[in-house]
Length: 316
Ligand SMILES: [Zn+2]
Image 1 (tube, rainbow, N blue to C red):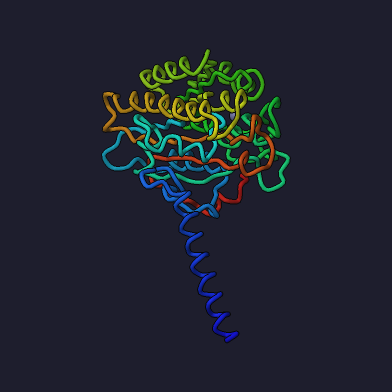
Image 2 (cartoon, protein in one colour):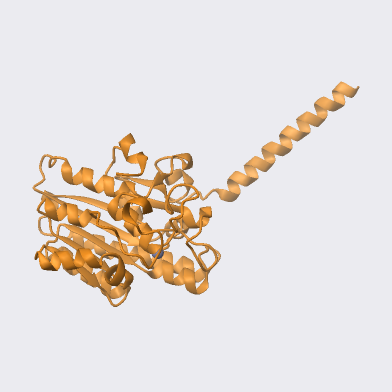
């Protein structure tokens, strides 16, 4: 009798657990969403360091031209403070830049803020600094906002040495008056084909980026501030309609830039590497700390990438 009751209890428990599991799965599922957990190329345990973006770009530049193409071009679009779960706000967005590139390449989990318990803040200057140099704070020196980059090369400087022209566009002044000041001075002094443009706002940065595409620059990076601005003013959260809207605006800003790329006269003969990413996440109305909400980032790429294990050593 006791055994029968035990069996009945176990059977009931299994049914309850199965019911709960089904409920949880449904609660998290989005049948029409392209951007949910299933949309990512790797699983969440394979979260890549944001430094890998520099490696992907360098690898692309160093590899031979593919058959049928005459020129290599790179476009990096940055959505400042765009949380990973913010991607759910663009899952059925018309004119989404992320959706338009991820199917031909991939969408990856990544992280900001250095290795675990690092002093590197999950903030703007360290984040873009890691993306542009391929190292963490002990390499580029940007532990937090307000600090200049050490004299280590960015994607732009390496590309210029190989004969490419570059453009960096953002409406956030600290890139220009603190982080990359030495690079800007050197580019001017040596008359390098490398321009750094402080835009007035996101509309202006979009227009200036489209202009740089028309002007035939080879390596172009532009950053939109919609999401970071919304997060700081009213909360980095999908419960915040203003943040949701900012995610959509950022991605439509990106799509207008992609349209300019695709309308280039020689587009079919050009090999474009396109990456869309963010510098950090956010929590409540701030970021910089080591919580998952602040550290978790993502990137989308328009081409398949072969990840070299050495790239995961995080440092040069
Ligand atoms: Zn930022």
